[in-house]
Image 1 (cartoon, helix red, strand yellow):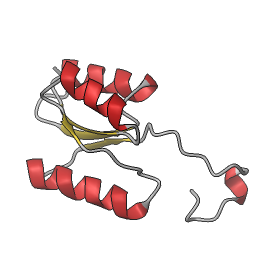
Image 2 (cartoon, rainbow, N blue to C red):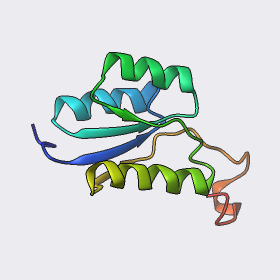
Image 3 (tube, helix red, strand yellow):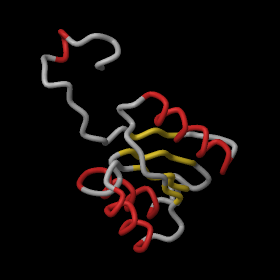
Image 4 (cartoon, one colour):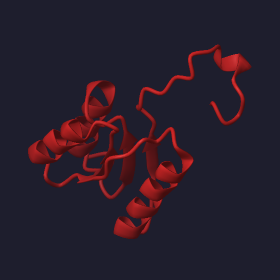
Amino acid sequence: MRLQGKTAIITGAGSGIGLATVRKFLAEGAQVFATDINESSLESLVREFPEVAAQPGDVSQPAEAEALVAAAMSKWGRLDILVNSAGITARNVAADASLEER
């Protein structure tokens, strides 16, 4: 249990790599705060893992990302790990993107 006592936010947690990361982090002892833009996927995650704290949201929006961090901090008083697994794209070359688009 290498992550025992650690708290983590995992974005894009409702499917794919994000969901696999949630499973692995829980198996390693972490407390997980999950988020996903797809509420039904997030609800399925919480049904499977009731110990997961979850909040739907669009982390491409700064206010929603800040609210997510605030909720995790309020719940546990600390944040050790952030896994950004949400699939966000601005439809352009990353090197040409503005800071806001990154």
